Image 1 (cartoon, rainbow, N blue to C red):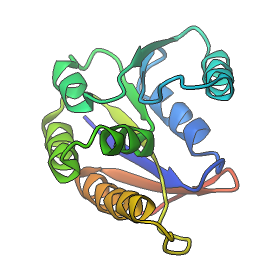
Image 2: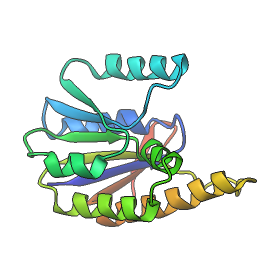
Image 3: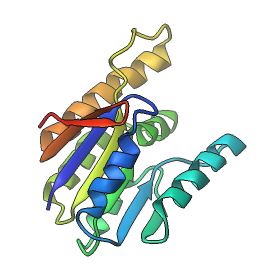
Image 4: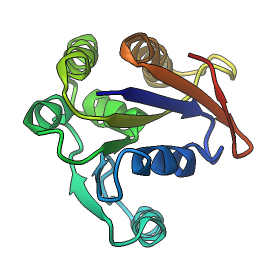
Length: 167
């Protein structure tokens, strides 16, 4: 079992890099989508991702219970989780205990018997946001990325479509 973590800015190419990495573990894979279709633009983004991946991917929509999903995996197929920052947003809006959710997720990764590739946005490279909710998100995302990186076997930073292994 290998945990691979991909992070980078928006539209950096991290999802495509992570998809390629996932398929290194097997030609049939599971894609766990954390996004929810809230408008037409998001629906189109999701459709574009599905078309790009092709028919050898099974898609599961899991906006909140990633920990439960990981516990249910049997290791038969590699898994790509895309993306953790949307999952975090879902929990923030649901007023979940973010630290608890993040720690439970990291604990589940540590005991998983499945090859898992994870995508998350790096949000700490910009300015400190001017409002409380955005600062809470940025702080939680930084904690989450550090926690997930600490339990990952591989960590990649992607910029301009170029991935660099940092762990």
